[in-house]
Length: 153
Image (tube, rainbow, N blue to C red; front, side, top):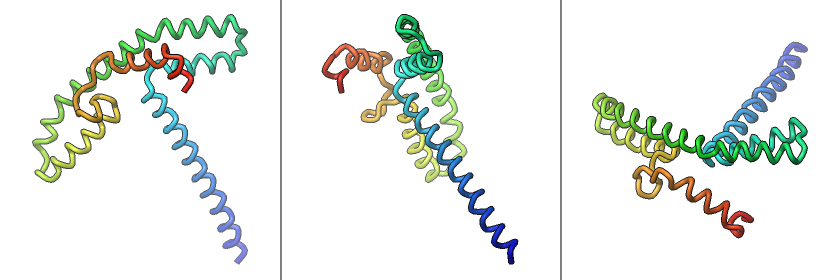
């Protein structure tokens, strides 16, 4: 009888630990996805703030680190655009092969799933379904950063 009580208590603690771990992993994954969706600029700013805090940088060092990240931002954005183009090309190449193996119902489901995936990966525009203009995202971000009213929001 006692062993059932101890087993029950142990099970509650184990399940609580597993649930807490899963919740933490999910929250971190969501945070990283949000950062990835916001593009390379905010990621660099986040890293700059983290270095400033973790390394206890003085104001001059923090300013220099921010400048370094700002200088690297165009290269990171270019790399991001190239990665998206290559990924899009690979996906365009394999989709017809996958479609050949599917039933008509599966093809419809597959096409819907791919549409959602392409939007999530920012390989297509959500409204038009077309690939976004190459510099569209960076122009919008620069416009927000230069407009003081929008920057305050």
